[in-house]
Length: 117
Length: 113
Image (tube, rainbow over all chains, first blue to last red):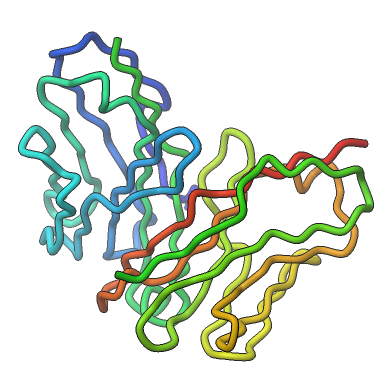
């Protein structure tokens, strides 16, 4: 297993365009998380899936953001009508239930850096 | 809500110097506490954790002790190396049962030869 994979690593888009990011978690992990990290700040929670069910969404996740995890495997995060304020690193993490509850041993991906120009 | 506050960086040190990064927390009860590290170009990695008061987490020469009397979880290393250059994040659970983490703003550490 190669860990948590995110694609693309970098994305530059014009304001108003839609973008979609993909996250492939560790195969045996049933929990998947999306975080956003802006320059000089720690990661901020966006949303969380257990298998295919999206169980929680942060108020940071406006109507322009949508996340899916069909079949409980990979996940996508789509941003519609991007704004310059959306520029950030988007991090995906996964965990198994035992690690999650006992150790919070998230495995993070390397992130997708979005730049909106 | 629960939160953590970290000392601001960057912290610049010479190799073999002693490193301390301060972290204080605000929480109801006594949550588990974590330090994550982010090396350049990589994702965050769990560095160490402590699950109850007075516990000491340790890994790769780093240590942190869970102090409930001062609500602190300071990270220390006795002799840093250039390879320790990274951003360090203090974190605690966000108060829910399913594993959301609340991170501090991060402290960049730069170790020079």
